[in-house]
Image (tube, rainbow, N blue to C red; front, side, top):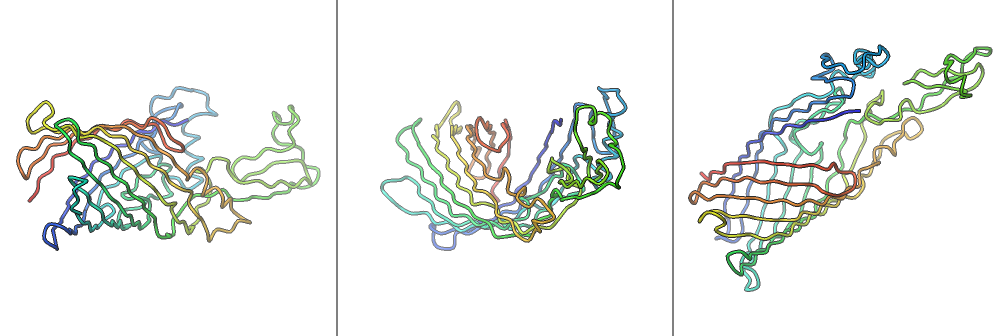
Length: 334
């Protein structure tokens, strides 16, 4: 039903310094982000809930103006939107371990704090400037072994967990209704195929005297009501295996080919009344598996300046979109 486009632009300010010789370092990362989400439907293109373009289906019953009114009744004012500001601030401490088995071995601890703007429930696909509102901590380690110009394998492993947070989510609500006795079926189409009831949003129609009970929607993002739930994001494990090619094409050029794996456990949810809301829906599809390949090419102008371009392609997984990402950056050390 929808086609989405996401635009991300970021400027990172990373401050770090060694506190023990050249062994232990601490640092902080301050990201400034701009994100924009745009949704396009098979019925037309929406810049937001108030704009309609390229209507493909001219039947009034499917017109985007009607769809817009349905969303407005649910308190959804826009399909997409944009956001700009400070993202999630993170801090880290790492230690470089000297070993004859590795050219470089680093272990550390990372903390990411929910300082970025959170997505609003008043937009169908609202952008946020962080990870959704959770404070996360992670343990990581990376290693590099240099054998030759084109044989420099490396590995990175990280395990992360989050603290519980109160997050606003749209959740289907149970609605019950009994029509007055003697009231006939309203929907003639459903009558013709022998269906006793029809539900549309939180408005129920049925035979007189027959009780009806159902959730207001079957699609989670379109639920009429938003609740604040206590959610703990599932633990995550990340693994990267790759190889660095030194002096690739250019003398100061480096090519890194890698494979990424990410696994995430299901979220846990509490403080939602399961007798009124479909609380289990907040855990649906929160378990994730992602397989990704990519490359990163960098050119080191000098000790302080580096140009980087990279590509990543998610080719398989569970509960993750198949995506192609391309980005570029200029890094300068002050």
